[in-house]
Amino acid sequence: MAIKNHPNVTILDHPLLKHKITKLRDKTTKTNEFKSLVREVSILEGYEALKHLKTTLEEIETPLEKSMEPVVDRKSLCFVPILRAGLGMVEGMLELVPGCTCGHIGLYRDEVTKEPVEYYCKLPSDISEKNVYLLDPMLATGGSAIDAVRILKEHGAKRITFISIIAAPEGVEAFCKAYPDIPLVIGALDRCLDERAYICPGLGDCGDRIFGTTKGTTS
Image (cartoon, rainbow, N blue to C red; front, side, top):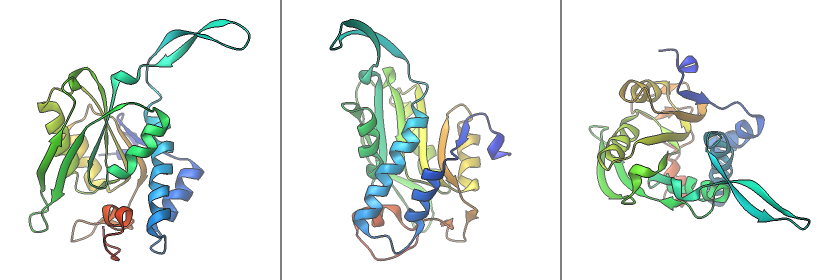
């Protein structure tokens, strides 16, 4: 599959985004800076991912006069991070659109089978009426993202966009094969997965680096 030409795959190309992702990759970047960079990258990616939002007109009063101006319906949006690393992206998204509903899906990758295992799910009851933005910093094999979309659909979600900071070609291909109609926004497309199904060159274990739980650099 020609990933860069896929109609629903957007690989962002902005110098600020590239710079910040480079800092995320650097193993010397400490926890606090790493966490801030994830938030900043999420803002940059969210700006692109949310560009199709519809607006309605609302009457406001400027210092000079009353005026009908466009506003986004925040009630129509829902951000859903895949726990735990996806939590690092929520703050940035909420900075763009404060007050939006959030859900949570908990998945972890079995170290032996490499398959995702669900351990938590909490979503708004009216998710079928929402524009859902699924958040996970890393798209490796694609298993967790595919499973998370399945869970969202089982709960009635109809309009879903997946946002990831870095992705492996194998994961993008698997995701697009499973859900060719779901938009995928990526900050950087990496080279490949290694024999352990880790993204290369990658940025390490994003969850561990956000929360400072290990000193390792694997992803």
